[in-house]
Each structure stands twice: as structure tokens, then as C-alpha cells.
Amino acid sequence: MFFGRNRELEQLNELYESNRFEYAAVYGNIHVGKTTLIKEFCKGKRFIYYQVTSCDKDYNLAKLSEAIHDML
Image 1: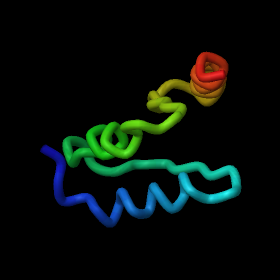
Image 2 (image 1 turned 120 degrees about the horizontal axis):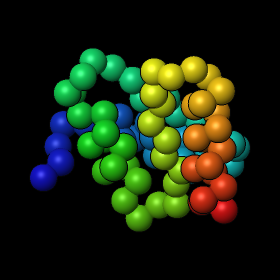
Image 3 (image 1 turned 120 degrees about the vertical axis):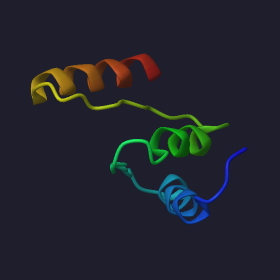
Image 4 (image 1 turned 30 degrees about the vertical axis):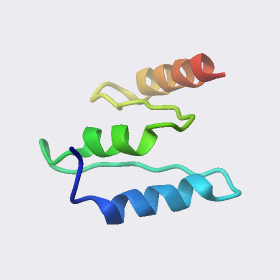
């Protein structure tokens, strides 16, 4: 069961339904439900998900590029 994040889901849906390219960065303390929120939002939608690591920016950009390529 998923509950308690209706406002956040509404905000994500506004971005998703926009006619423009949108980007959402979800961040916060550990164990507050960020991943669960994203998984709930993505149900039934076409999406690209990439979780940034603490490695350098070149590594993260390469991995994000792979995620985008895999989606296309």
C-alpha cells in the first residue's frame, strides 16, 4: 500500500503532463521513501530512471546516457 505522498505525486504528474521537456531530481534523507515515491509515480508510464552515485560526474553522465539509450 502507498499513502501519504499525494502532494509529491501531483507535482510529478504536473511535470509529466507538461508539453515541455521536464526534469525532476528527488533527494532527501535516507529511508524516507524516495525510491518508493518514484516507483509509484512511474507505474504505467514511459520513463527513464537513473540513480546518481557518489562517483565522479563523468561516470554518472555515462550511466545516464546508457539509461537513455536503453529506453530509446
